[in-house]
Image (cartoon, rainbow, N blue to C red; front, side):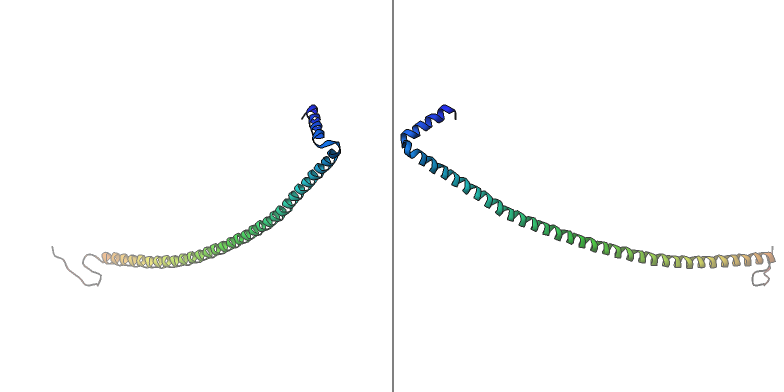
Length: 148
């Protein structure tokens, strides 16, 4: 509003209410505006206080939930690690046992193969000796004659 508009409003108010009532009206209007502002400030303060309590409660609940989730997650990780270590140890033990059994079987097979090889060598030597006696003598030492 500009200066002339305010001046017009004051003159209209003076004519309507008179010079005596104008200060009382202004005083009442000022008091009403002050009470309205005070009530508005009280409502704002109450809302801020109420929401501050609610925000604090929500932060506490949120922190509590985060802590619980973190603790639960840590417990699950520990359990998973324990199970994993246990499975790993069991697999290592089984692998060691299987390897030992395979080595034992391989040793037995090697021993049997060596024995067979020795028997074959001995048989070859016996056959060679029989051949060395001549065509007429067989391994039992009896003569078998041939005729042409």
